[in-house]
Length: 144
Length: 144
DNA sequence: CATATTTTTGCAACAGAGTTGCATTTTATT
DNA sequence: AATAAAATGCAACTCTGTTGCAAAAATATG
Image (cartoon, rainbow over the protein chains, first blue to last red):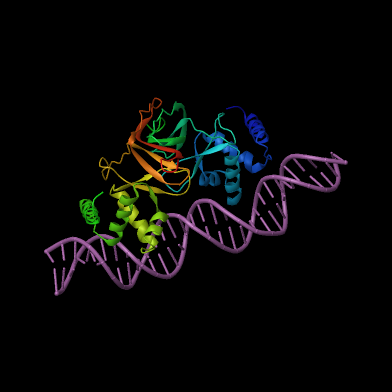
């Protein structure tokens, strides 16, 4: 993972590449994503930053990251919205997840299984496929 | 699909099997699901029943159907919650979708592709799989 | 490095989705 | 048909997310 300073440098570079101002909010939220190594929802971010930011700022920051292809959404079956950092293949205009998302029924965490590829799916005639989302639920490595 | 009366009879039987009272609300909402052949969200139901039921009643009815395994949720990347009727394999305590869900980016409808099976996915060591959800987005047969 | 310009943030107020308690109505039971 | 049990509707509330605008911070420019 590297030292704290190295992480900050990487985050700064990432923001500049995306033509975004480097602000305290953005750096802190990206640090959270890097540390968590999984998916976060809005409330996680509010909690873990110790309410140091306004709710509105967090919403807007997440939206900005989405727009720039820095993070992506993960489908859920409830009203929450989960986000995770994108891997290198994603660009601002073309986002694709090629990996499986795993939701642990024990600890509740959602993680990206980067090594697990999504298999080919053949749709019925007349359907055009743009994107595939796979969410597996079960028990994760740590909880077992 | 059968005549309107046949459908009503089927719905009545379904409710009685689940040990639920047969009420106007429940019958009407189940009729909607049967007719739509796709996924509905709460607002669809409110709209299509012509506001004849209280919002609270619709929420409670959907929750009851979920509890009894009559309907299931479909994962989304927004804050909406989508529901679809379960197929025969589902029971109250053990719900599994063995089919793919398709969300059309043009008309916005979500449908169950019953014929399209979910391929095997092999997770990394240490992970236990309970359920797999696949949501494909693209353009559907009708919109193409 | 000081100043001007642009961007971001925080506040207040609002909109919408979903929940809870309780009285009334409907359904099931005998 | 009378009673018991379950479902419904209403009011009020909470939680999540949004919008407009002024203040503050970050970047660009001389």
